[in-house]
Image (cartoon, helix red, strand yellow):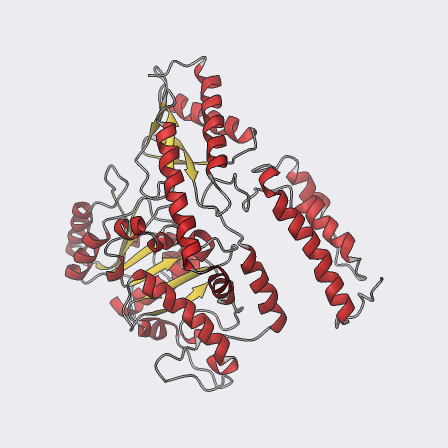
Length: 479
């Protein structure tokens, strides 16, 4: 049956036909994820250039448009939703969140102001409260859902600046380790701080910020008339998965009058597990916490969150009045999200968390996260059985950093060897790994986080590492 796509208001039949056509493609795509390459970008630049096109005056059929997407554009990419994607920090793409977006976009309710959709705002507020409870925060806590960890880190820094510094804040100094996510440095620049206001504190052998070095830096800056105001802790760094001594940092921050922000974008949702809670003891004492549901809760990209111990700090940092806004809420527990974030216009992103939790329950996510911790420890053990492979550090959560070491190679040659190793592993296309540079040089990373990654895929990862090492080691003797 043909439909009139020149009209913006579709008939019931046209709406069903469009969704059915899209769903057929989506289901086929999801079912084929395990057999798709873990990454395929060969010829992607040429493809991208071939897709340059002017604004269409007349629309095409759903079949033509969906074919362009699924047959041409989607395949030439990192398969971030597949089980073999072990690079960077995998994004999930849980299906219930896709359904939530369809519902939220279709009903198109505005949730930036409580009065516009009180019940829907309450559902999103419930999600924030779940996260606060998970972190061990008191009833005074609050927060918001963001587009990701970068915006959450930015709002946390702005709140800390407002609470700890005067209006003339340029003497303020903030402290982080070399393991901190680059979004914190960007947040400092966006918040008006010169690059020299950011201090990089050394780390220990486990890549945790050194408290003695932090104290020394604080003393030196105060002696020069600076105003230390913020320290950033990692609860699962991107490089190595490092978790700082959060309890020790909380003690230091309290004694020094600093705002303690914990970037738990990657690691925070391991709080659902017993091992995660043990690793992040003290996180409940932080002034603010970043959590990314699109990481540890397996949601699609574009879902972060910021929590604060005192909900009023966000309001003091972000609230601006305007005559055209409807009446805003003064009663406890009723939140106008536009009052506590940079956004006025925003989507109903809370449904992306609320719907999967209602359908699956927290226990399903807990089991999945425990499985990732188990798989990571198995991977670490198997890597150590491969001649020439050394772990840079024992995994603290679900990231393993490792490298191939060969006798007689200087640092430059060793880096080149490990870059060749990762290229050979990824060329097999069953798994996709990423690398990073640490003080010891270039290293490979395996990050086990996708809800679709199970024992069979990490076994393939070890097989590909072992085979690639054997190929390279033929000309380079290992220790």
